[in-house]
Length: 257
Length: 285
Ligand SMILES: Nc1ncnc2c1ncn2[C@@H]1O[C@H](COP(=O)(O)OP(=O)(O)O)[C@@H](O)[C@H]1O
Ligand SMILES: [Mg+2]
Image (cartoon, rainbow over all chains, first blue to last red; front, side):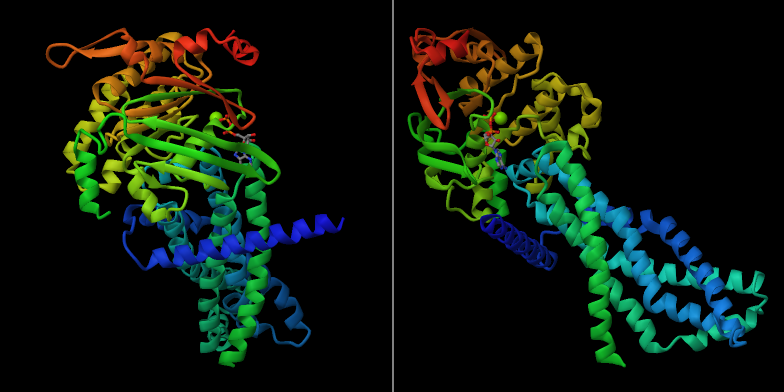
């Protein structure tokens, strides 16, 4: 029993160590040539453009339901016109970044783990190394860059569509005038909130792609292993997104407010 | 090594260390275990330049692991591995790149990059690691695809090829950069006899006409004996002919048998055929 626990702790430590090594190797490779520009562009496209639909839909419905729910609550105080404030503040500060990150975890984190996982179990990663290419530069760095830069962009898109979704419900269902809604949206936004909403997604994007790459490259056990790795990557990255969101929010609140 | 050196090496037809009877690959009491499972125990052998080593062994015996150790894709737990006289068991990944520049490997299932076309797969090293002009790389890609008889498949994706075709593309990819050493991991397993013989002839040709040193892992005794007992001789012009190997030539191909992490047999084709060892006989029949 004790031996089992001992083994568990050891393998957990080993895993953390490998994760840190991968991240530091990737960060080093990001700032020194050679760069695989073609692969970077391909990943920016796959991760960024490819996630657009999902992010727009998520933002739209989240903003809409937010307006609906807060509209009901606000009615108790006769404050229905300030619904825009609540929508914009919650979207930009919290829901936009977190929901976008979670959707991208499902779409991109799983994709990275599956792709790198199947490359690992079919020896393609070894073949890359045998042919003189560094898998970190060739595969990991493009995904890191795409995650770190595309998740913030997608978050902004999600924020906008969320506020637009809120407007639709406010105008059509709650009977709040367009002018009133948009003024209220602006009043709800402080500069710190915008920064908060922009800074967090960089961290969340990093978390998603780094976990996807790490889990993918550690895949063992053939095709079955790829399936397990994909699940593991999504679960681990989802939890990590929520945890990192909490800690980074705390830090930013401490620094900015 | 600077990129310039890589260029010149990849571009010259004769690999370094072409002197005969100089060791290209040396294993000295190499050991490897995964957790509690011992895969190799004190394995030692030497491959001389221009020679071929044929590694036999049941599946799971550690044959693929042995080839990966040579490229530094794995590190041994103990022992010394030398390639071209340099110790690869202690090298950093960067130093290993220099060694790998002269070694080509055909992976067991081909390990083609499935997001790239046949052309990009075969030319991968030349496109990415050298500054050779694109037209020259393209010509070389067509040339090696011609060797393996797949010239017209150059723009296909690996998923559009049969298993045998994928294996042949993998061979083309391994030899595109003209390495001095080739490692073949079961290159004919799962191929029909005709295609398998094409691959065998290719291996013989590279050994005898290009002086490539090679290690061949296989279960297919038919192919193993074919390679050991045949020889390619140049004819007028660019042609060549495959004939039965002269006794001297046959000496250049040695068999080794890996069993439970140890080498249990080392010798030439005739010694293997006449061995009285029960395990060997069971394996051969
Ligand atoms: N990454 C790994 N982790 C743990 N065990 C492994 C790993 N790779 C190979 N093995 C084990 O090592 C042994 C030898 O594998 P391999 O060299 O692939 O056999 P083969 O002779 O069929 O090529 C097998 O028992 C295999 O289960
Ligand atoms: Mg094998």
